[in-house]
Length: 166
Length: 310
Figure 1 (cartoon, rainbow over the protein chains, first blue to last red):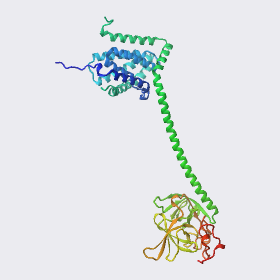
Figure 2 (tube, one colour):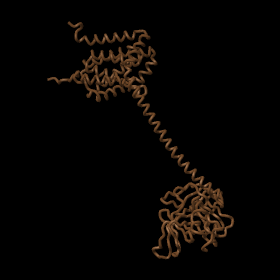
Figure 3 (cartoon, chains in turn brown, orange):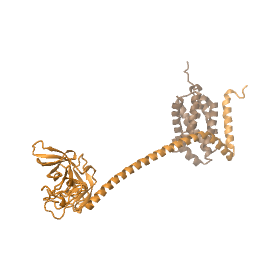
Figure 4 (cartoon, rainbow over the protein chains, first blue to last red):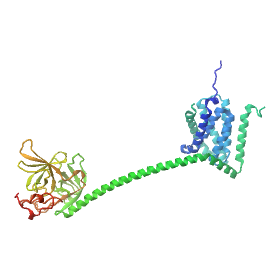
């Protein structure tokens, strides 16, 4: 008898609870991110919402969610409209796919995906925003990127405990 | 039949979303800005409303805290001004007293005191440079405070009437008679007047310095008799309890009563001291007038003095 591995499913988080969590993340992205910034590092609440949504409902939902949340972020940033939508669409799809292929479901893996997703998104966003200037990219990414990724993972872990009950 | 196989649906959605994003990115900057502004307005409107309300609340809280601080400061200032006003009143009284005093007074501020329940010594800021010497009386416009016991260059130590070693020769103004005795400290900041057993005294009789003893001139108010009792142990003397006229607890400034040049052993027999509300006690050899004029009211002039010889 082969040991059964529990695959995460949509049933583990109810849609209502996740919707509440998304609303919280939207508000937090507008209100809390700046006050919570430490130096250049700031948590990314939208990425937290995207990651848990994509990990729960897989690639299709991840892509749609990424696009919506990306548009929201673009509306807040008011620069390079569509860039976050593109990045988060790719990321949402990728995270969803990773859950289909990666059978590990421990919280640590989820947090690692969260931190990794933040780094990937920063590479994309900063790469385009730096407009080819390596110095600008280097300064922002290498100083703020890893810290922001760790910070986002930390906040994501807290949110997971508080809102998603896992 | 589905357009795409089920396992390709996610890719199709992702590609569509990515393509839409690229289209948005490819728009001219002005167009991008206008779309971004519109979306921004929609998504941030509720939050900006909440922020407005919450910000107003925070502003009110800050304003409230500032107002509380201002009120606290104003209360402290008001309390300070009350203190200043009280001190001003006290200094005016002292100034008025000094101006009308027939003897030379040196004003001094109390700069230190012991903080026992009943203070017994204090330091004043007049010393040798002000010609202060030991054994000079220390008074206020109300009456006797004590005497100087040691003098430094700029300060002096004053033994208060509550000090266990304090004593003063006293005169009881009994209306139609006078009684001589000795004043000594009693418990709780009061005084005892030790009188001969035959002496007559009543509650309310005023006590002034007698002028004997070489330290205090005649006529400095000491206090008022509150009760009279016989010495319980020996029955040889009468002890009157005296309420002092000077409240030592509120003293901030005093006068050192400077000795005149004619020192004949009796510090002030030749001085005509006057305290508001007190009669001039008759000098040695003078006669005392009627009760009404002797206690309180207008001072007795030598012409008014008659009656019992002392």
